[in-house]
Image (cartoon, rainbow, N blue to C red; front, side):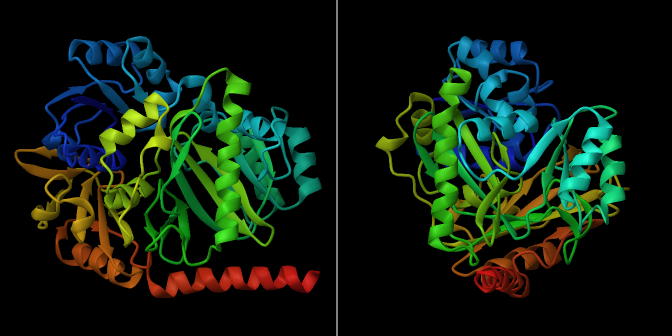
Amino acid sequence: MKILLIGGGGREHAIAAAVKRSPQNPLLYTVMAKKNPGIAALSEKILIHDEKDARAIAEFAKENGIDLAFIGPEAPLSAGVSDALWAAGVPAVGPKKDCARIETDKAWARGFIEKHGIGGNPKYAVFTDYEQAAAFIDKLKDVAVKPAGLTGGKGVKVMGDQLPDIAAAKAYTKEVLKSDSVVIEERFVGEEFTLQAFVDGKNLAFCPTAQDHKRAYEGDIGPNTGGMGAYTNAGALLPFITPEEYETAENIMKNTVAAFPKETGDEFKGILYGQFILTNRGPKLIEYNARFGDPEAMNVLSLLETDIVEIMKAVTSGTLDKIKIEFSNKATVCKYAVPAGYPDEPKKDTEVIVLAENAIAGTATGPTSDLIVYYSAVYEKDGKIFTTGSRSIGVVGLAETLEEAEKISRDALDNKIKGELFFRKDIGTSALVRKRIEHMDKLRAEKVTKK
């Protein structure tokens, strides 16, 4: 079995490690824009090339007799890499370009959800004219401002957070409109969570819920990043989500998948990532991604017990309902080590020393290990690892409880990862999780009081 992986980040290292754990002993071929040393060590053959070059990737797949492909990041999906692979006779885990618009075009996504009565949408409108957008901001008063296109998880700004007032929201809207249309939405108040699922066009197999942390510094302050870390609880639910709320989020995603053929004429096959916010009115949809989250992929794939190659076959053949997908009943805490000065002025080309070599993904065995280390934006030179300026190393602790998993991750970053790096110490801690639970208890109580 020959598997092709497109992408070279921490998410893709987690995918590569899961593929190499398969009892089928598949050969891994990889296309990366920049060489990830962790992925390279697991690969039979690598092509350092533009990940958006659909034609070249399809040719590479044909030349090497690839059986199945897995597309990691959003940019290749937007460029039609999945379409090109299927056209070349290579089944791909990753939606075709039209279906990937659920992530790549936020304006399209909101209209799609509204048109098909899927639920979870905020009050929103899409604008290309500043005066009209400003008037809508005045009407809603409390808003989120989103560029319509891809921004690497860093383009959304919210009042009461990155935007202190209406004037700031209008100023950011004007800035966005210089290069993109803008989506103005009502701001939801609550706790965010991620629900990811393998999708075969009709059936969904859900992963454990996770909570990502976008802000750079402890206490959820500082600039937005691609994600400083995430945690999952033992079992499917985060501690602040009820089974009923979880079911609502599941149904929103199921209804979304069912609507794709009606809208695009094609089925969504790949990973659907729902970014939800839990409010006192239940889960609401912040946005969809058409691939695994980074870092959330590192959390859930570290727990995956089912052979991912069998899952890939089921996703591409429409037979997910025929297999049982299982995850280890453990908690995970993933913390990213990032260069000093990240994200605004990161220190580049500084050495990173990983002392936990036996825990590097690929040699670790997944859920039976308590520590897995994933390489992200680093490079190798003369046998040494160096930073590039983006997130460097993802460290995942696995344990029976969140408290234990957090300690494993933190201890590894304190003692086994050396360099001019920092990480958020609060992710996955008992204090942070208790704060989330108390926040939701307060919001639910407010709803009861208002009734």
